[in-house]
Length: 220
Image: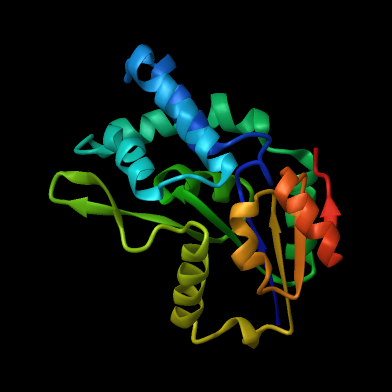
C-alpha cells in the first residue's frame, strides 16, 4: 500500500485558492475592496515569507462565511470554482494525480485552506480524500471560526495523523509515501515522507530540496 499527498495552492493550482476566494468576494461586492484587499494581499505576503499567524488569518478569512445560508454559499462557490479555480488548475497537475490514482495509490490533498473552499476543488481533481482546516458549525451555519488544529505547518502532520488513525493506520503502514508541495511552510511534512517532491518551489524550499537531494518538479 502506498500514499500520495498533494498540497493544493501553487502546487496543483497556478495560484492560491484562499487568496482567490477573497478576490472573488471583493469582485462580487460581498466585501469592501478598499478595506479587504490590502489585508488579503498582506496575509498572502506573510504566508510566502513564513511569517503568517494562522489564527489571525483564519479570523479574517472565515468571517464572510459566518451565519450565511448554505444555499447562498453554495451559489458563491459554484461561481468561484468556475471563474477563479478551473482556469488555474494545471493540466500537468491533473495528469500527476491521475498517474498516482492509476497506480492504485491512496491519494489525498492536504492543505491549510479550509474545507469549504477546497472540498469542491478536490472533487474536481478526482481526489477522494481531503485533509484541510475544518470549520466550526453552529445552529445558524458556519461560525467564522476554525474547528480543531489548523492544517498548517506542523498542524498538517497532526491532521494527517488524525486522518490516518481514523483509518486504523499510521504513515508507517505505507510502503512508500509522496508529498508534493511548493512551500517551505511544508518542510515538516516533507521531511516525514519517503518521497518528498518540491513543485515549482519557493526559494527557501528550492535550496532545501537541492541540499537534501529531493526531487524538484515543475507542473507549470
